[in-house]
Length: 154
Image (tube, rainbow, N blue to C red; front, top):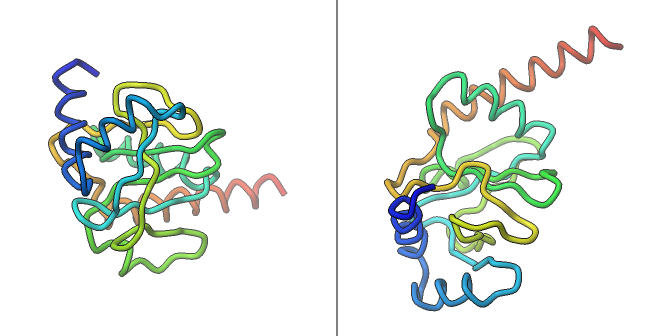
């Protein structure tokens, strides 16, 4: 990311913080390099298990140039796709968790590595999010391919 892209991403992320200055302070001084931000204002987050998230990302990147922001935990056992607000409350899917209004997510600074969680696709500051319908289609395709591989390999 360029310096201007990082600044735009920081502004976009901190715009939801109750105290944007405190959020920036956390990023600078927290040994893990993370801050807590509320979901449900500018984005919700759909959290997929890594075994579904990785193939879903592969499908998404074949369909569109750049999905919205995407977080992964240490070891990439879970992946969080940033989707439009309201998505989490309407989502029905086994094994998928939603973070919407009333929930907080751990967010690393967009221009730095952090302990425990990292950006696979950092925000670009423009507000780009992953379309929920497209994400659902990508998940179905990824799950279908995994099921097919399981039948062929078993």
